[in-house]
Image 1 (cartoon, helix red, strand yellow):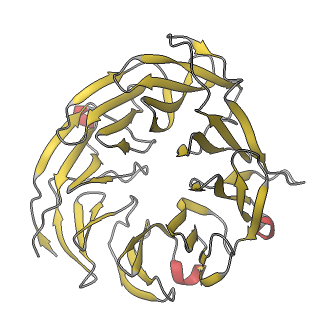
Image 2 (image 1 turned 90 degrees about the horizontal axis):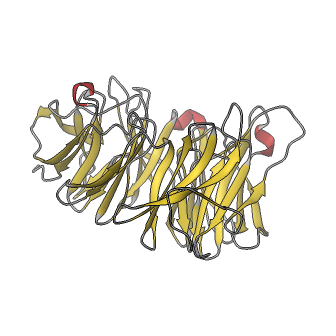
Length: 374
């Protein structure tokens, strides 16, 4: 593996997403400001900061865009989990108090919120799936709390007769009017399920017993209309999203806690926080492992691919992995990543956008050109 120096196209200092993922709705980039307590919107092409809010709320999710407005979950002083709304031009359009609480965050998203059709969906702690109807007009735009009643409801509540915690996965897949999600009951793997239900009525379409539990950061991956990957840390299964026909499954002993699956050509790649393996590839057709490579620190972040090369935000360097040769081919130590929390590096055109662990400048998000030549 040789040293290289990637081209930095732009950077944004004093931007610390840390616990929450980066997200985008081209041409806009959204950075939850964990340390500063707010949200930043920038131009994906240039990195120009279009607007930012600080000391407004503690982010609890990524940000999503729908019909001219940006939504993000946060907690405000006084202990209220709220959904905050901004216009894409940067005007604060109010917040919706989802629930008063003490202690844990029962209505807060498990770090990610999703747009499915005209509905905002998130899975919350303690076994609830929430929906927020964005088709209902927000008639009053003012910097105060708005009434969530016309919009918000609990779409699904998991139940189990134990004191164990019911945990929902972090991914939600939308197919037409339906959504698909995972849940598990800690200590009771026999009841863990993947569920498909109608997001408008709440009617269950099907329930599927999963061959794994302990879901990872990307626990559902809709590859195409015929293939859905259920990705648990302790097992994978590829099924048909309509019929639930199982194509293949992979047990825990072959996965070694790999997460963040991504399809490149005819291969599914995933990374692992452990060093053995740090990245591995599996045949999309058979589930058989076709490649594996170790890295002493392990890998924490989702990876992005451009022209057959996978770009990885590593702990002390940006790494490049060649999917044709199935080896690490280069590294750039001048652009270290951040390993302590998953913050979702992005790909926009030929830009690799990730968070750098640079405390001296309050955290830095930067865009690197994905132009490495073999």
